[in-house]
Image (cartoon, rainbow, N blue to C red):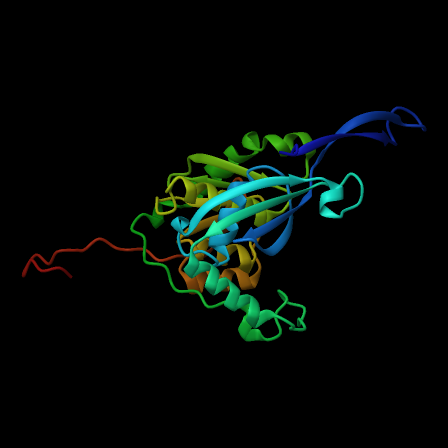
Length: 291
């Protein structure tokens, strides 16, 4: 596998006198990753070459290609040289080949046929508003959602920087983390792209069977509608971002019933959407029936 960060010789100006000085600096790797389903290439993403299996699975689930992790039968990751990939010298590439269920592949082929030959409107490569895939089914209410309060999200955010090991070297990577409902950070995935980092996290949770556990996503980015859509599609009921969300991101969270925190910079956090809370049944003292 290719290294996620690489060393480069640079010239630093402004320090050490007029001429500056030469030194080595670590840079985040950004390589083309081809996502191939049953031998058919579907997309090429620019990503950090780490946790590629989790990235491929998370992408397939969050984009609706797969309905369930068991629809992925196998993942094979291969590295291609520049010559093999017909890329400029020094630019290597990765292919993530997934074997998926027949049902999922037939649906993917149907979707690809419907998109063939379209001239995009400039938004997500679709030609009409109806192709934006913004219809979200509301999530079921979660009894634990009120535990995801300001204290919990700020606790998780505070724990995130020490776990961003690649960013500590290269200073240019996003992180997506998973925290328990109380704010205990358990997983951190990094990538140059915020969407990629989230897909890596979702794939990691899916591979370990933890998508249904109480908890929330934390992200070192703003919250746009695509990130909400990815989380809602996989049943994630709460998320928090270090920066403010877009108005569309908030609307998607409202429609999906996702609790959305943003601008999470201690000591302040802002709740933009409350999510759906399942209230425990109460008992009437007179008739002792559930109210």
